[in-house]
Figure 1 (tube, rainbow, N blue to C red):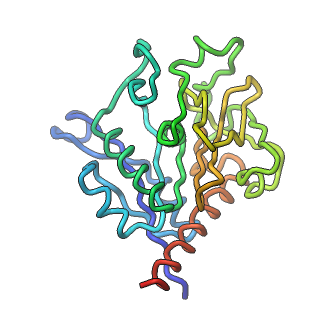
Figure 2 (spheres, helix red, strand yellow; figure 1 turned 45 degrees about the vertical axis):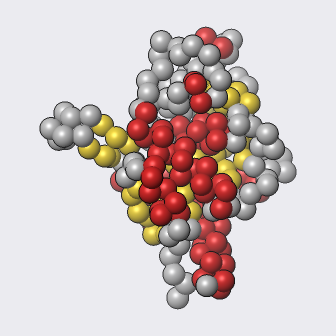
Amino acid sequence: MTARPLIGLTLDAEQPGGYSKLPWYALRQNYFDAITAAGGLPIALPHDAALADDYLDRLDGLLVTGGAFDVDPTLYGGGPRHETVVLKEGRTAFEIAILRGALRRDIPVLGICGGEQLLAVALGGTLIQHIPDSVPDALAHEQPNPRTEPGHEVALTPGTLLSRIVGAPAMAVNSAHHQAVDRPGEGAIVNARAPDGVVEGLEHPGYRFCLGVQWHPEYTVDPRDQAILDAFVEAARQTGQGRAAAA
C-alpha cells in the first residue's frame, strides 16, 4: 500500500476573543477533509518562520490557504496601503518563508485564494489591492450567495497545467476576494480568468508542481475541483517517493 504523502496546511491566526481568551489558530475542516479525500495526510503548520526548513525537511507538499486578510503591499512594491487592506503580519511572515523555501526545494505547492496571491508575490509578481477601484464593471468577487455555491465561471487557458488537470475549457467557481493578481511573476503564467478579465489562477512551469487558484476547490462547487486536489497530492506523492528512493 502506497504511503500517504505528508501535506502541510497553513493556518489562520486570530487575536483573543471568540473561541479563546488567548491568541488562537483556526482552519476550516473541509481543507483537511479535501486533502484526505485526495489521498494525502494533512498536518497543520503553526506560524514560526524559524521552523520553516524543519517543516520542509518532512513535507511532501505545501498548501497555502486563504483567509480574511491581505498581503502587505510593501512585499510587492504596491505603493500606499489601500484603506480596505487588512494585515496579519505574523501569518504572512511565516507563509512567505515556508513558501519560498518550498519553491527552492521544488516541493509541490498549491495556493488557494489568498495563498494564490501570496504565491504570485513569492514569484515576483504584484497584486491589485482592491478590485472595485481598479477593474471597470467588475463582477461581485465577494459573492453575495453562500460559498458552497458558485459565484461565476472562469475560462481556463488552453495548454496550461490547470487546463490539463481539469480537462475542460471552463469551471464554475466560488468567489471570496477583493484583491487579485495583477502580474503573476517572472516565468509564471495566468491559467484562468473571470469574465471581467480578473486573474483567477496562475502556475509556473519551471517547477514540479506550482499552482494557484483564486477560488476554493475544497468546497467542490464544481465536480472538477477534486481533480485539482488529486493532482496536487499525486505530485506530492511522487516527491515523497523520490525522497525515499534517494535516502
